[in-house]
Image (tube, rainbow, N blue to C red; front, side, top):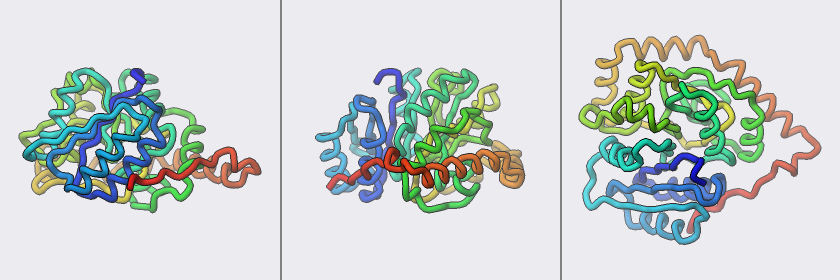
Length: 284
């Protein structure tokens, strides 16, 4: 599937979350998609075993690498991005669970508008890309097939977001190279480093867009390393004001209501069974 972005999955220490993530990724992603599981010496023995068992049976074209010693989240992800060169990629959090069609929809979002540098899907814990409520953490969808179908039925408008959100973010390779990649000297977490990169891309004239036709679930929001928030505030003094304005105005309110309506229509349809999909089973 060379027309799809490379999926980059930096591993963490939560084995159960990784287990669920890999099961969902395999079920929701086209066979043959390139996936890179990269371990900055974070996964424990059980996490390594989960990854290795998944590699033996996945339909995806997956690879696993592990560093002998950790170099830090942001530096590790930057190494991955450098290896990918100018290719489009999607960075996926290791505790996220993609819904069916997610990757093709993100690729289509980048293809529709060359000014889009980052594309972020909906998420139940997606901050500014949150659904069903903005800026709140909701439970993951109980009916992922219906939620994915409702998202796919949305009209693709790809509105502007204040910045990319780290549950899953598609990065245009050419834009990423132009901006110089992640600032690993200033940030410890890749969550903050990706946010900073998206703000630099915006300053260079690209857009950080919502991909309203895709959904990636997550158990909670990402977190920053100590000191990252202070660096962001110093470098981008208007950032907090812009974020607060976005949360107060809620420009995505109508779009979330439309998605809710589409979701309700599927639930009430007499042909609900057409949208059923088997649940992804974690690797054991």
